[in-house]
Length: 269
Length: 276
Image (tube, rainbow over all chains, first blue to last red):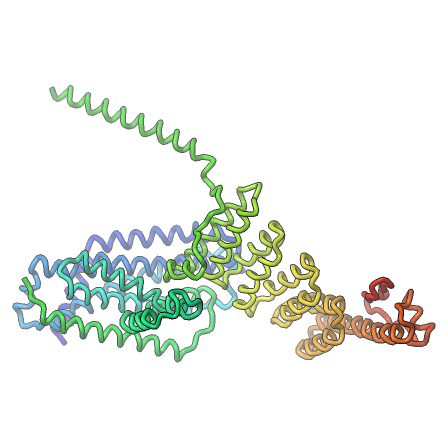
C-alpha cells in the first residue's frame, strides 16, 4: 500500500507540474469569465445558463486532462523507458498501475475541486444582479452533487483511458480509443432507447444485441450527467445516487483489474 | 551589410503590417452585414439525433441554439414560411436538449404563436415545457390563451386554464378564465364542479382568491340555470326564445339569476348562447 501511495504522490506532483495543466486551468478560468458574458445574453433563468456553462467547463477541462495529460503520462513512462527504473525497484506491475491511476485521479479531483469552486463563483457572480432569475428549486446541494458525479464520470473515463494505454503501443491510438469509448459511453443508452422507440435500423436482433452488449461493456457516462438536475434543482432519488456511485466505483475497479492483467502480460521495450 | 539586412527587415515588416491592417479593415467592412445570422438554417438534424451528438453538453448546445434563433429573429425583418419552419425545428431541438428552460417557451409563445401565427406548432412545443415544468403555470396559461385566441377552441382553452390554475402560486384569473371558456364550450356543470374542488383547496385567509372563485361559480351557476330553462323551452316550443325574458313569461324560470359581475347575462337568439 505504501508503494502505491508513494507512486500516487509522485504522479500527482508530476501531474500538477505539467505545463499542459496550466493551459487547461487558464482555459477554464477564461471560460468562467465568458460565463458572465454568456449569461448576460439571456433574459430568463440566468442561473440555469450559468450552471450549464460552469459545469460544462469543469467537464471539458477534466476531459482535456484525461486525453492530453493522463494518457501522455503513462505512455511517456513507456516510451522514455522510465518505467524500468520504477519496476527495477520492488514495485509490482499491479502496484504501478494502481499507483499511477490514483495519482492521476488526484489530479482530476484537484482540478474538479478548483474548477468546481470557480464554477460556483461564476454562477454566483453571473446571477448576482438578477436573483429573481434563478430557477426556484436551485440549490447548492444539488449543484455539489452534480459536480461530484461529474468527477466520478471523469474518473471512470480515466480508468478506461488507462486500459487503452496498457493495450496499445502508441499514445495516439490510446487517445482515439478513449475518445471512442467516451462517445459510446455518452450515447449508448440514448441510441438504444432511440432504436427501441423509433425502430431505426429495423428490428434487427443482431444490431440490438450488439448495442446491448455495448451498453454492458462501455460505461454509461450519460447516467452521471446531472447538469440539468443541478441547473433546475430537480428532485433526485437518493437510492439512485447510491447505485450510481456503486456503479461508477465498481466499473473503475473492474477496468483497473483488467488493466493490471493486460499490463502484466505486456512486453516492455 | 548588417544595415541593409536591417532595412530589408523593417521594409518587410512594414509591408506585411500594412497588408494586414488594410486586409483586416476590408474583411471587417465586407462582413459588417454578416455579423448577425441572416439565415434561419440551424443544425438540420432530427432533435433525437442532436441529443446524441450533443452528448453531455446538451444544456450548452440548447443555449447556443436559442441564441442563434434569437439573433436571427431579432435582426431579420421579412421572415418567410421556410424560415419559420427552420425556427420551429430549432426550438424543437432546444426543447429536446433541455425541455425545462423557461426562455425557450417564452420564445415559442412570443414568436411562434404571435409572430408566425402558428398556434398548432406553439401548442405542441409549449406542451413539452408544460409537462416538464409542473411547478410553472405559465406554459399552460399560454396554451389556454392560444387555444382560445387563435384556434377558438374553448373546450381546450378551459382545460388548459383549469390545469394551470391548479398549480401552486397560479393567479386566480386562470380559474376565472377556465370557467368562462368552459361555459362558452357548453361545459358549465363541469366547470362549477372544478371550481368547487379548487375552492376547497384555497386557504380561507386568501380572501381575494376565494371571492374571485365564488363569484365565477355564482355566474356559472346562473348560466347553468338559464341553460336548463332554455333546454326546457326549446323542448316545448321547438324554437329558441327571442330573449331571456321569454323564459320567465313562459314560466320556465321565476327570475333571471343575478350576475355577480353586475353586467347581466347576455343571450344570442341565433345561436342560443348564454354569456356573462
